[in-house]
Amino acid sequence: MSDVIKTDALIVGAGPVGLFAVFELGLLDIKCHLVDILPKIGGQCAELYPEKPIYDIPGFPSVTGQGLIDNLLKQIEPFNPEFHLSEMVASVESMGTATAPLFRVMTDAGTEFETKSLIIAAGGGSFQPKKPPIPEIETYEEKSVFYAVRRMEELRGCDVLIVGGGDSALDWTLNLQPIARRVTLMHRRDEFRAAPHSVEQMRSLVADGKMDLRIGQVTGLRGDNGLLSSAICRGSDNSAFDINCDAMLPFFGLTMKLGPIADWGLSLSENLVPVDTERFETSTPGIFAIGDINTYPGKLKLILSGFHEGALAAQRVYRYVYPDKRLTFQYTTSSSSLQKKLGVEG
Image (cartoon, rainbow, N blue to C red; front, side, top):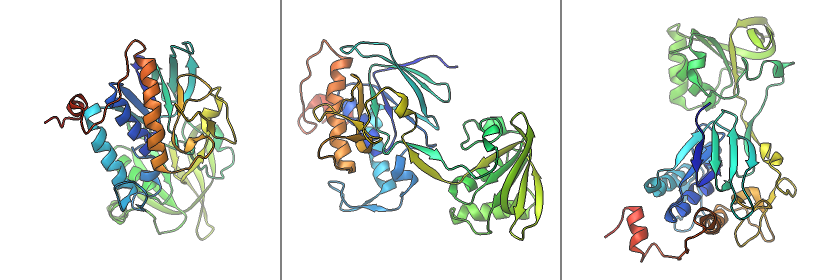
């Protein structure tokens, strides 16, 4: 367990709306951390449609999902936010008052935060892994079956079975091959949805005898006390065989669920978080919801709406972080102090 991280604001979700909230908070001298369940920054834009053009971002006739994320990251560079990826907020405990909020936030990776404000920018909720239909797989989860790699070192010297044919499966095959005792990649067919270069690298390793590729499906698991000894498999020709393994990583894609947010004590409406339209604050003072996760009369699920919501939420967060300071609204085009923060003074 690491030491408690104290911060002014904790943002749940590192998609475009969460990233722009960093910018608005940074202009107000509010430091923040971001937590995201995905292993990379960008949310749905980076995970689901990185190359898909978006046409309704002001000032950009067309920009790809990844292009938008890249620009937002460049925009927030002056504020040095800290990211905690491949982590999911597991619990939120209120320790303050309605006028002086303070929250203890724990992630499933054991990271603990103490924050004066919490901004939920989780899109439609948290990305949850799609689980393969294997009997009693729950017995092995988080012991020898993992849907995400949190610490590569824990798989050093292991016999690892990776199941899937997309980018995640191929990326982890290539990343773990140098440190695992043996990596086996299994896919239901000999065609892959991953980047061609990754597929070529994988096939080269197979040809050199440095890893195995099997075509088929996992139908069952063997082991004791949640620890795998082998996977029961069926080939594309209906042949039966076992693959010895200490760990299995199934990558069957992601689905959106509200996740632990439902247990944070917030008022909910049809799996969305109601907010006011002055501050975009939830039913709990100090907790805000911006982007697709929130709901209010006239809500439009657009990225540009989330940007607006983040800007107004930041104004309210300021009053919690600096209760004794007066907030003076300034424009980046004319304020020398804001331009200094952005590194563009003069």
